Length: 321
Length: 256
Image 1: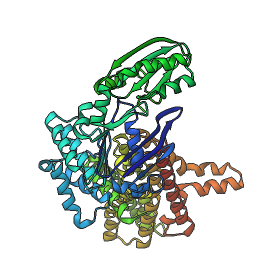
Image 2: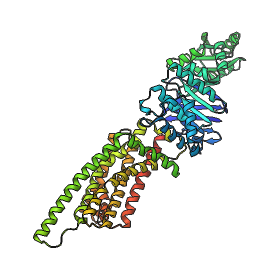
Image 3: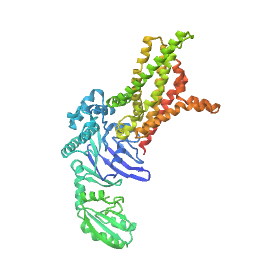
Image 4: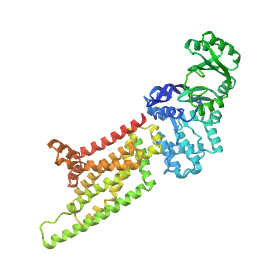
């Protein structure tokens, strides 16, 4: 349904996102997880044809966003970070406008508006001025706007921000109920949010994909998998390749003399093989240790640490590849 | 460009004028000022006409020349200051509230959006000008003005105002700040208005160019009952240029 290939967006010298690659299948719910400023919104803006990419392509429903933006926009319902609502309009007028903009045929306008109102549970405020509604209602009006033309793809940027716990559960249920016939990408910086709704998670940080897996796979891998830290005298390509070649090693990332080696689950006993590979290639081990990390922990690190002092350097490739 | 998309956008923006105090304030103030002007012009014309009659000073001034022409001439000046208030919010507010994302991610073209927004402002101006028809109506009840002159004056005012709106929509697209949009619009429109002033000191070629650029110079024939093609072409190309630049400005934001 959605194919993202080599996607890069540059703002001046800064890369907001850097070479993203992922696919979303029809009917899937994919969660975009990452701290603020990770590039989630930028990616979504490119997918919805709001901003053009600097490099790379996005194909939605068989249409390239750059070549056929109108077709792509027709297939997508988009809820931006700040719901794009007109404060002076009533809820039903606003939804009718959104439906018209999205080319809903005239005879279906009322039906679609009613359906969106009912789905997002805001029928009781349909006649109210949006500006007078509470934050939670405004958010749901924004969501109703994304739904109103029953799009094949839903792109939801932080859909539950500003809602109270009860509403959050309702919205999550709603999103889950939409899976199957709709393909959904939602972003969040809240871990439980994506684990509650998404079938698959893409963890993104500093504009790069750090991990991509199902919830179970990711949890399993991060709970049971080991990250080895190694400080060597001299890191060189030959040595790194030798470590990579050890069966059970998923990836090696080098930041200067510091290496982070990612092991597959239950492969703790290959540590000696890793060490031997490093020594045989003459890299000279100064320090060697390991640490278990859970998804929550890796995420905490992603959100709270600077990249240059980070245990897992997210700007270097290959941590989980 | 798709007419139904343009209409969808125009309709929402037009309604939004009336859902906020903007429309009522603009209409009320505009009509109050125009009413005041009309009353005084009529009173002055009355006095003049009586003087002519009393002292038999030859052919009296016609009511078209004495009331209608200055009425519409002044209306254009007033509109110069009122139109920025109509256009300022069109894009500046959308960008500030980020509602522009709704339009930009809907399956409509940027041309649809620009034309829809422009159309809403034009419709609002049509309402304003429609309300001023009361003045010629009063004149027609009590006098015998030239209907043709009224019609061309109205048409000329409409064209000129659309030009003012085109500048306004451009500056509204350029900034998120509505105050900035207002001041830029007034200043640029005013400069284009009086650009012919420097024609007197400019050389022969430049003098023609400057005279031709001036907004008000193209309105003058209309107020005399003349519709000339070059003036109409000037107005239409002015509007087209304004909307085209707006389109380019909005498109360029997507790339940043």
